[in-house]
Length: 225
Image (cartoon, rainbow, N blue to C red; front, side, top):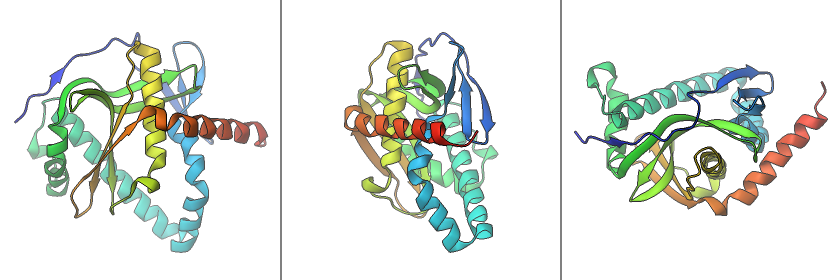
């Protein structure tokens, strides 16, 4: 089994406290400010589509599908984190989750060094916070690495939120550590299919990111107290 190299980067704090509110997840940063989760901010972009989907399939079915997807996504994230930490124990996982890890291994093995996993970050510049899956060296390049799961194959135009999310992590990381990262890597485990890999440049997504954050701020300002 491959042994991954870890080189921890000092952030100046160990973790960020967070609360889940009616408007989404809010992080409490060491600077005394409270920042919305970047996931919460970007969820506005898909809100109408999700509402339409829930109406089409029905609330009960939508809740069931969402719970299953969330549970699977969490388990795949956990087994990948354990594997990258060089602590993988196959006896702790069900065959379907082990199969997901096996599918992802060819891409995971392209990670040469790991700086952080499940890393809490925030940005005063962006006014958001979040927790990035992995920061490390992918194909020899410093990268923000995010792991996703999907029931079906997705094309680039359907996952632009992912790229904006990763661009936000890259900006947060540079602000917190001084280390610039522009390479964004999305590794997606797909049910009954080969995994997908998307590589993007941070600067191709920052304009859309800034627009999404401003739209969120307008929404918050105009929402009833």
